[in-house]
Image (tube, rainbow, N blue to C red; front, side, top):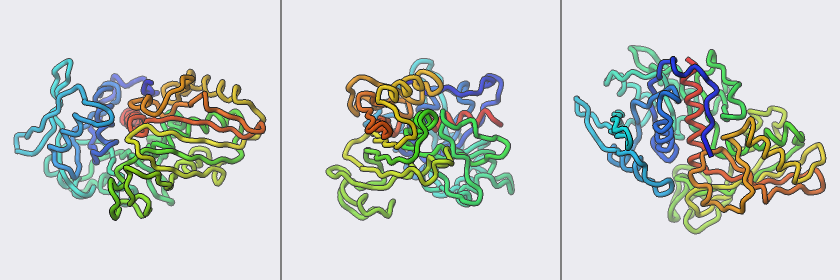
Length: 378
């Protein structure tokens, strides 16, 4: 699959924005890879500094080598700037062009802003990928301008942002990115990997058949919020995540179904779901079940998915008729891929669909798409 192209067409003369990437975990590193591959001429932004709690040696090593997604073709080395501060040095495998990215290990947005101010680093936006700073209050230091600190005009977050009084712009690229308002939206969330998988499916079914209600189950691979072996889990309150991810199927929560109501308000309270964590490293599948208003058939539903995958949702929603399995979808850059062989309709109005997704790569690509849309908007 291909990553979706940005809707902006005047990118060639828009000044490239400087971005800070805070959080260099699974999503942060893949987003870094994707943004670099697309080039700043396409995305409209360039990552000039990375912040993470890990050492720069660890960050550079894990950017280059990935057990799931393979070894990156470009060289990554640790360097030092003229003041002795750590950097990551990326050398393009084909052109030989060298990109130097600053690096730091600050624990909070406030500390990071102070550190960047001390280094006199110029930046326009922040890509917040820690999964920790998920309220406007925690993100506020990025925007502060006292003493020249906190220079960001936009912050894009790799997880849902919690703020009932002033909600962040919840963007699922390819589905509702046209709702982004650069004049008022300063905090933008790219939602979650499962929401990005589910939303295109809901869009197709709801617009053509009208969903009455439904539920989903995502069979989801392990993440770093789980324990390798049984031990107390300090990242999540869910006790089942304290059990070994290597040998267990672990039911847990997902907010993806309820988050759909932020895109389709009329479905508020009509969709819900659960997750089952499985001992695989990557490529998940979502089981979608919807009761719809109009009677249909599996053939008609698949025709709808196929048409969408070749039309308005091309590069976002995929459609597959081959009998593939999870490893076949590793490194697939689309948000979700309908398994056409598994589509069912029960009693005319209950629609069931399986939708595959690379929960790391697909989401990272959509995050970069959202960042690019934001970067070219101001």
